[in-house]
Length: 496
Image 1 (cartoon, rainbow, N blue to C red):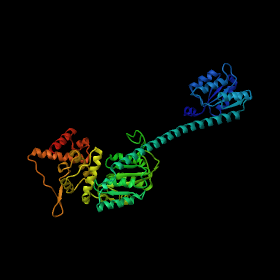
Image 2 (cartoon, rainbow, N blue to C red):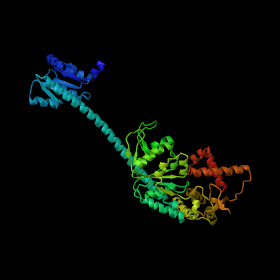
Image 3 (tube, helix red, strand yellow):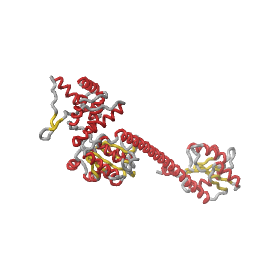
Image 4 (tube, rainbow, N blue to C red):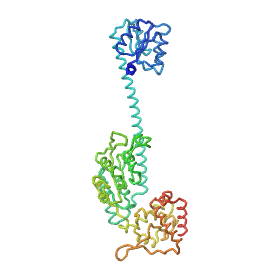
């Protein structure tokens, strides 16, 4: 214990070529608890300081071989002892000597014969000043690190915001609002509801509807036609991320917050600052995370994983779901209070079968869109192909129609699209006398091998639609390899 206490005491180095002077100084300073080292000359002082850096040096000026000024200059030239305060001891109260001492790097001087109270006062003052200086330097380093971290964060956020703006603008330009092409009463109602939401900058919106009905297009229309159009539009699919990472992705995390967190990360809420965050498939959000989302919606503050402080964000949230949220609430899978907070305004995206009269207009729109992309003249639908489209119920809605038209345009090579160019997820259906729908008669295969091939092609087509044409993901979904998918597609092409 005494050794630990001694190590914590300030270490003073006394340098004088007169042992009597050193003895007096030692008695005065040791009585106050200082840890004392002594040197009888300049070189010895430099050697002692190099071995154990003192907290302060009391240095005599007039010494043989090497005077105090030279000793001080060498101490200041050494990085290890550069910041050690040096108090000169001199018998000459001359201004030239004082100036020379300060020029050499000293911080103060004491004249001989020295007075005990003066020595103690000056030593204590410069020890305290040096300690404060070190603390200030340490704080400055931390401050600089914080400033650099803040600048990196700002730069990262600006870069992400720029990327998101660019992506959103390209998406809006590329896709426009083709999901709303049509003249049906239901689509006119959607337009009116979008216009209402475009007038608000803060009201949260819940969009419900089947997959492929254009829920994200409604969200984009609300964003780009409203007061937040200059801010980022950040689309997030809540079902596309592992549950253990959703919190980090939404709110961000701090480096080291968990295994794999190798650097600080900005969350989607911060990315969407002053813009719109689109939470698709909100019904898939883990229940334990819903309370945190509710808190952010209420107070506008996010807390990164691994941090204590909160960050203010200005974000409009538009959510979407293709499931019955009321049913989820009844099953205790969705918080009722979160639903009421999200559903300040509800928009229902109608399925395509409920606006059947819009199918020809949509088909023509898609043909023009893809023809421009392919550098071809706009094709036309044969009367039989149009009738086939209008008789189909489109379980995949507008997204399915778009995919059907794109593939038909490729297969027809820009010529008139015929019925055999149309590839449906399920058999086209026609209304029966009782108002229900029944599959159109299809020719059965002649043998079991042909039936297997037909079924295989059907499954691959459905999987391709679910994966937006991604061959690798389709193979994974069907538990096979990509070569088999390519083979089935080639067979399908030859069959046509």
